[in-house]
Amino acid sequence: MRKLLGVLLCTALVALFGFGTAMAENKDLKVGFVYVSPVGDAGYSYAHDLGRQAIAKLPGVTTSFVESVPEGADAERVIRNMATKHYDIIFTTSYGFMDPTLKVAKEFPNVTFMHCSGYKTAPNMSAYFGRIYQARYLAGMVAGKMTKSNILGYVAAFPIPEVIRGIDAFALGARSVNPEAKVHVVWTKTWYNFATEKEAAKSLLDIGADVITQHQDSPGAQEAAQERGVYSIGYNSDMSAAAPKAHLVSAVWNWAPFYTTVVEKVRKGEWKSDHYWWGLPEGIVGLSPYSDLVPQDVRDLVDARKAEIHDGKFKVFTGPIKDQSGKERIAAGDVATDDMLLGMTWFVEGVVGSNE
Image 1 (tube, helix red, strand yellow):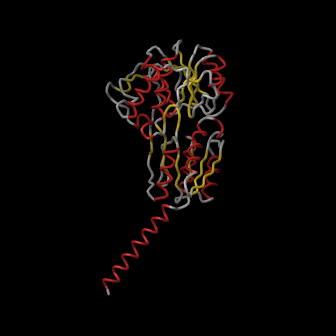
Image 2 (cartoon, one colour):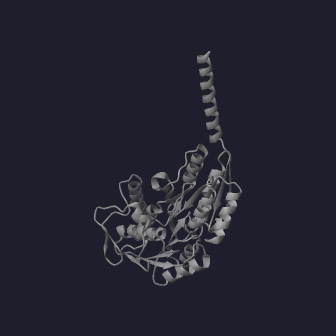
């Protein structure tokens, strides 16, 4: 009788555990997103929203978003509002949302918070980003081969490591195929302002830039390039529609694989706080299709390097690398650590402009 009771008890526990696991895996989830710019901007928030749309198709997942949220106190209000409405996961997608996200995360320990592009974490809050600098390097190679003036224009938002790292990677890529190329930087101090970004691009065109790229959310810089009859390289999403007569290629995001992974880990109870930094191998960053303006030999050259990055045979920030002043920052054969990349505040040789 004791043996029989034991067997029955074990069977019941197995059944209960299995039922509990099934319940966890089938748990409905509410997932919220906070964007710094409009989702229709064809840029950064648009790319994140494509990822949101992908997870919205998963069984039992409900999503919503708030767009054009200013960084600071207003962001904290929006994030807290989602938390009080019992969202299971909240993705805050701009660097300036980091501290507001951390503050709200401490108040709602049962909610999973994911902050993009920052570095602070908590037991229920992770930091995540992608190695977009890999795609920037490849786009820089295209620019370096296509320029005639050797003046490349870069319209940039804020002088933070994320942006500086991208500028440096672009310059390294350009100068790997054209040592005479220089990257001229203009800061807008805004993530999304079409008119400001377009005017910044014009100022670069006025000094002879014949390829314009950007770390901005709007296609303003792309439009300026097309109006002047020069080339453009987009960012965030395929910006060819904004400047079909100028666009060469774009460095693009694909957030769907990462967002899907996070949702499934939370659903299964496998999520843990961490720093996530995926790249080309995981499919989170890449290049858009080349336009017809890019010759086949340039495509082949860039694609070969892309394969090397994907396979881990080539690291973008491999020395010797000097800064603007000629000081060696990374010795020959050394590879920059992630900590160095995440804290990068200096420009490489070949970048023209202030890092402030």
